[in-house]
Each structure stands twice: as C-alpha cells, then as structure tokens.
Image 1 (cartoon, rainbow, N blue to C red):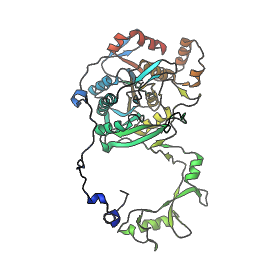
Image 2 (cartoon, protein in one colour):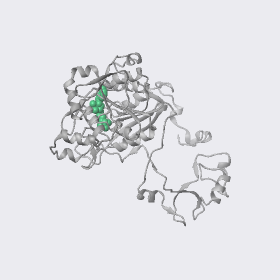
Image 3 (tube, rainbow, N blue to C red):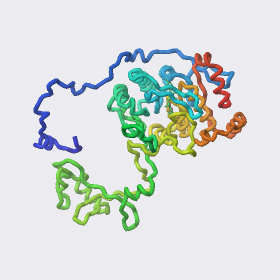
Image 4 (cartoon, protein in one colour):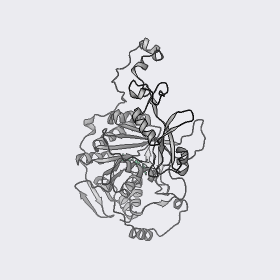
Length: 445
Ligand SMILES: C[S@@+](CC[C@H](N)C(=O)[O-])C[C@H]1O[C@@H](n2cnc3c(N)ncnc32)[C@H](O)[C@@H]1O
C-alpha cells in the first residue's frame, strides 16, 4: 500500500476489488505462517550445536608450533569453518561483524592466477543449502546482540539463501539485499541477458545494531546534477516538495497562505513551521506560486550509499593490487562494510576468508579479526598478504623470476605490520606437515 493512505481512502470506491468479494477456492495459509525450505537431511539445532573437541596449534615455523588453550584473535585458522565456529561458541567469543563470501554454488572448480587449485564449488542444491544453514546458525550464535552479518552470494543460490536467512535471523532483522556490479562488461555468448552483478544479504542480530552511516565523496558532476541551482552567494541548492502523499484532517491538511495541499497530499510541516522556513529564506516560490523547500549542499555532505554498489568491481586493470586468488573481493568494499557495521577494537570474522581481503581491511581499520579457510592456497595467499601486502595485477602477467627468499626477507624487514598468527587444527598438522611446512617457508615464517 502507498504511504500515507487514510482509512477513508482505503474504503473508497476505487479500492473495491473482485478478490475481496470472492473467496479463494482452496484456503490460503494463515497470515502469520512463514515459508521454510524442506529437504531430507535438515538437521536439528541440537545436532548442529554439538561439541566437537578440537585442538589448535599455533605454527611458528616449518618445525615448531605451540598447543593453544584458546583461539586468539588477529589470526588466520586453516580448518573447516564448522569446527572453528563450534570452538568459538564453546569459548563464548562474539563478533560484531561477520562478512562471508562462500562458494556461490556454481558447480565449478577455482584456480589461482598461478594455476594452482584453490577450492571446489560443486555441491548439489540441498547439500549446499544445508552446508550453509548449519554454518549460519553457528554464526548467529557467535554474533554480538548489536552485530551484523553480510553474506556475499551469486544469483545461483540467492533466493534460497534469503529464505534460509529469514528462518535463522528473522525477517524483521533483514536490512538490505545489495546488488554489487562485479564487472564492467561481458562477452554476450548466450541467448540470455549478460550477468554483471552479484548480491549481498545484510542482516543484523536484533533491531539495535552498530551503524556508522556510510557515504562516498561525490564527484563534481554529481553535485552539479543533484544541486542544480545557485543562490546570490553562489551556494548550491536543490528544491524538494513541501507536501507528502496522503490526506490529513489536522493542520497539515488545511490551507497555508490560502493554498491547499495538492489533491491526495498534505503539507510536510505545520503552517507555523512553513512560515518560519519562509522567513529564513528556505522556501522557493515558483512563478505560478507553488512553494518548494531549498536544500543546500555543504562540502561535509557525502553521497549516501544505496543498495546498488557500482563502484566496488573486481580488479579490472593491471595496476590494481591483488593476491591472485580467484574470486578475491574488492578491498575498498570491505573497508566500507567494516567501517559501517563495526567500531574500532571490535572483532570481525570472515569464515570463508579466501585471500584475506576482510581481515586485511579489518586490521587496517583497527579492528580485531579472525579469518578461517579450509584451502591451503587460501592460507598461503592470506598469510603472504598479511605479511607483505598486495602485488599489482600486472606482476602475475609478466612473471619475472626473482630470487624469492632474498626478496621476501627484504620485504619483511621493511614491513611494520602487526603479525597475523597462523593457526592449524592439530589433526590436519599431523596429516599434512610437509604441505603446511611449505606454506611457512613460502611466507618466510
Ligand atoms: C569465494 S572464496 C572467498 C574469497 C574471499 N572473499 C577473498 O576476497 O579472497 C570462498 C572460500 O571459501 C573457502 N571454503 C569453502 N568451504 C569452506 C569450509 N567448509 N571452511 C572454510 N573455508 C571454506 C574456499 O576455500 C574459498 O577460499
């Protein structure tokens, strides 16, 4: 229903509809009934919150490690996230923000720019949804009451995941479905519309949550278009209506300066407030005597972000710095999300951390962080980036052979970054000591 429609308008002749006259031949579900997804193997909460004892090691070098009593922050954990999330619940560790960019359910395998295998994305539909549901239930448990969760996803599973998230977080805690433009153009090889976007589902745990209004510094062109008029002092302003939809019986429904609000509308302000605005020069009168309010531009203003994000595309030219990990997300986008939904010192967790974009951004903004990933390539990419930063994309194209250990030692001695701890599940360590050892050598641990 449009905003501001009165009871009287709802009962007018225009509101008569055949569907109010006839009854649905087969009764519809009750008004408060919520839809859920059904499939076999949907586990109960008791099964999901099972205590799976786990022992974690801090890897200090290819040959030395320490057994941990707790999971420290400012760390990367190499493990399946379901076990780490369970451990975080056991330790009662709560995050202010979860950002996750899980596999999208594409049915593909992903490789790094160096053509090493990174991760698989080939689960069946129900299998994928239950995999995500279990983890999302655990994440909700690890979230502060004023915390937020952002789930970055493709078109493949979006609709199903929205239903799953409504079920877990509650429809009332749904905040936005954000559309992110992921690339500039595509080869149009199929008989369908080109796919240029992916999506972010944004939920909060409750209705009271950390929110630092984000905005972008607008370009001159946007300011000129949005605030097209100038006053006698050269200040830019735009004109906005002083009426709103819906009729009112009170003061705002009556004539002001002999003029009634347009049909079906009411004044946004009482006549005395409109007089005050006019006295202060904030009302503009058109040639045929219609009032509008002046809204001035000031340089502290930012352009508010909408739920369509065009500016955070994936790396697209050779000078952009990246890790080379497939599906690596835009660093500036992560900085924006973290700034909006957490404060300095808060804990940010990315349980599908990939190349570490989230934890890198979290560290840069003074947040505590934990990154989790099951892939050995992800471990290498994240730990390398946290020690040495990013490389221009062109470096992967013109592969120059350099003396690697010399180069790393030099880079690290110049690096002032606080160390990101490398944590591994002890059983994984026992099974893959050589491979984990290679990661430590590669990153110069
Ligand atoms: C789309 S990528 C994340 C990319 C990341 N946002 C970045 O900027 O680099 C998804 C990641 O989820 C990881 N992953 C998949 N299943 C996992 C699991 N059960 N536990 C932990 N990580 C998992 C994959 O290894 C992969 O690195």
